[in-house]
Every structure is written in C-alpha cells, then in structure tokens.
Length: 110
Length: 114
Image (cartoon, rainbow over all chains, first blue to last red):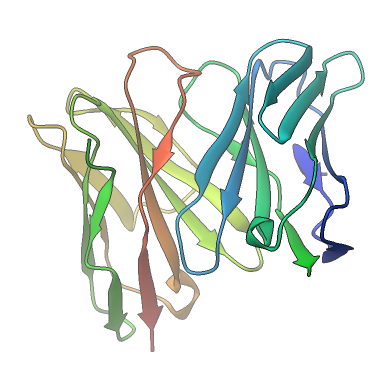
C-alpha cells in the first residue's frame, strides 16, 4: 500500500464547474500538506500549503485537511480551461522529503 | 527573483554511460532536493542537501549520487545508466533549515536512456 493514494483520473469537467480533488494517506506522522499543479512538460508549481486541519482559501482554490480521517482535498471554484493540468498532493513530516500522490489529470472543457 | 534553474533541459544518453545534472536554487535558498518523475512511479524523492551535506536520502541505488557546493548549487550524477533511468529529474529548493518548509521546483531535466 502506498503512503499517499490519489486517483489518477483522468477527470474531465465543463468550464465553471467546481472541481474536487482528493488524497488519502496512511502515515499519521505527516504534518505538512501541499498541492502542486503541473502543466505538461513543466515542473510542479506550488498552489497551496497547510500544516493544520481545516480549510485554507486562496482565490478560487480551497485546501482542506482532515487529519483524523487522513484525508486532504483541493477544491477549485469557477474552473477555467487554463486550470487543465495534473494536480499532485504532497506531504511530509518535518524532513524535506516530500511524499507525492500519483497525480490527477484534470481537463476543463470550454 | 529568479526561480530554480536546471541544466540541461534535455539529455539523451546510452546505457552504461554516466550523466551529471545541475541545479541552481532560488537565491537565498540553502536546501536543495532532487526527485525522479516517471509515468509508472510518479514523483519519488532521491536526496536532499543542506549546507553541502546530504541530510535525507530516498530508496535509490548507489548509482545515484549528488553534491552541493558552497553557493548552494547542486549536482546529481547517475552512473552506469539503465533504460529505467529515463525520467524527468526535478530539483526543488527551500529557504529554511527545518523540514516542512515549502519547496519550489525547477522545470526539470528530461533524461532519455537508449
């Protein structure tokens, strides 16, 4: 069993829809949680970073962490075609070693 | 402020050769981490350097090695290349000494082993 599980998709939604992306993890030592966006043939770009349970909002993006359930989510409101990318969850426990999910490939259709 | 830069961006090598990849972190960042990304295994941690010392290491064979210079620039080396080493190699830098700090990725070096 992988430490971090993420549905690879692909996920296809119409423009303007609310997108929900999720990861589950098994290591209760994880303290820091991140979401990265990766466009084709590019490096991952940090979207959201949090270290506590609860919600964190940044523009159209909301990151949610539930440590009791070992479950994290990323919500994208008013999705745009430019949001089409692969979304990666990542987490660590205090060392710089990030453990990534497999990534979810998302397509927003105009 | 300039982002993380990696050179070269693309490389083609043959089995048995060795390769050196370079990474320049964001100015002021002292921690540099390396990751391998493949379609099958996703993003996997290779190692992390801070102040010229390797602090963390992932589960990769000894053919994968790295180093960091006094200006925080880092190199990774892969010896005796195998077909399975074909991947996107990503470098990430972070500012703070302690773990848990946000990591910023470069564009990667795409290595193809023939």
